[in-house]
Length: 250
Ligand code: PEP
Figure 1 (cartoon, rainbow, N blue to C red):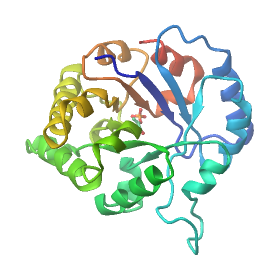
Figure 2: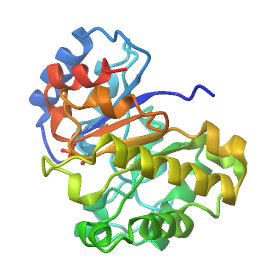
Figure 3: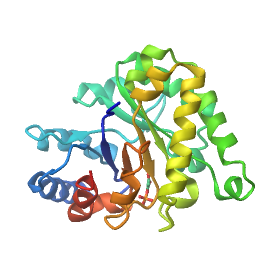
Figure 4: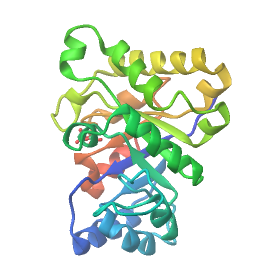
């Protein structure tokens, strides 16, 4: 089964408007030599400008987060409707930094996922174990429970709008990467878990991205694994040469 390859850049809280425009201009000049679909997720305040700049480009824009409610008294938050109203239909949910610093639980994430999907948006759903979990041999258990609690309530049909991003917390921004074998082992486990809760067709079609210190030097080997369908890239997404070296690892 050939699944969609995706390389998504999570810019986090980096880049002012001029810096965003400069990076997007460089990205637009790059040649995509492979078959990866390219997504960038700038900070919320620069989403509108990014959509405008990428109007004539195959590079897609995603939001890094959204609130679960339709609208209302949630100072500082942005809604699915707001994101969609500027032409964006993809949102990253469940990033480990949202879980750690903003206390986003699986239950809250389930609500956010429901809202995004009810709007017809695509969700890039992030999850992954902490270092302690892996040291204690609990990584499979933790990942399975994150999936079960936050997205396994969805119908099989809804999975066509879900992309999974396995991001071991110990590998995010640390320079430490899961080995290609560790990534493949977990991705195969995730696909098997989806298959057991749904069916083989659902598991076969879902793209599972790996995230955690993916760099130009290690992307090819990680992406060569059969269950790794792409990457969610943090630090290396802030440099056009590095990001496209990763995009072109497919
Ligand atoms: C991320 O934040 O999703 C990430 C994978 O970061 P980095 O590539 O910097 O480890």
